[in-house]
Length: 175
Image 1 (cartoon, rainbow, N blue to C red):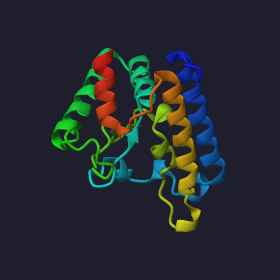
Image 2: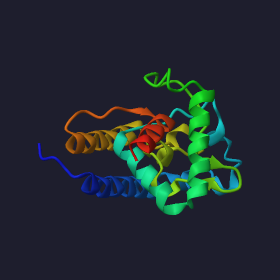
Image 3: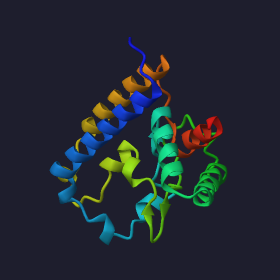
Image 4: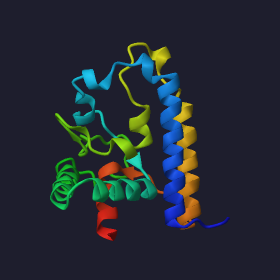
């Protein structure tokens, strides 16, 4: 297996996410409610959100935050991540894929602060009235397998899937 540099892996990850976003947009999203006209409470629902990501995705998000927001705003976002981890006891339950928490990257009035690089589960999610309009789960599973392989090619070992706030906190600590 050829090892990829982190820089090349992040470029590949962006391509994977953008391709996935286009598939969802072209084939499914138009059947869902418009998020901009929704109250968008799903992202803040502590009993709903359980998004898990890999290390590469966390690095992509971390880099996005550093590039897009002033240092003070990035610091506030990181404090919110830390608060969600503590308040919802995520560190103790990080291997539990059903443990839920509110997304620390969603702000009322502003929306998703990481929209351009948001996780695959978030790209696939929307409010569909009919179950037959939902994107098939196998679509998300397929792209997640590709992300796993990308992580393995970058780090030389299988990827670990942790809750979004955990990987963000770990990535921040790495710098």
